[in-house]
Amino acid sequence: MSDFKWSDILDAVVNGTTINGVKPGAPANETLSVPKVLGWESGKLQAEWTILENLHNSRGELFGGYYSVLADVALSYTAMTVLNDDERFKTVDLRVSWFRPATTGTITIDCEVINRSRSFVHTEALFKNPAGKLLCKVAVTFAIVPA
Image 1 (spheres, one colour):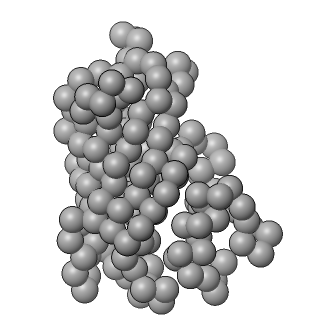
Image 2 (cartoon, rainbow, N blue to C red):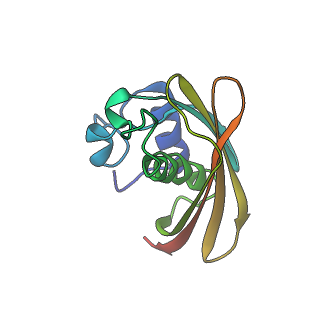
């Protein structure tokens, strides 16, 4: 997928389709349970993810570190919404703040670009449980790198 548009990738992710026969996303997405992207617009993205019991900790709660996986994927797609097609990016900072545990159900993930400069894209994701209560907040900074 060397010749592509970020919008084509995002649309294919939302629709579950391929681009020239190739499924968009990192190879790790096939192994990891990643969020389902519901929709996007410039600077924003909505996703959801259903908690899997095999990702619980010994207390029967979602393993806290897994939020990092979910956020890095969802916020990578969010960063794509503001990049030029000739720009690439990589994660350079990821911070998680936890508020309450999650055990079952579908989590909603509201993602937003907080700032886009020449060198960085700063993003934030809010994870909420089915009752709408905040589970955690994740901030990820992406460096914009040459293609």
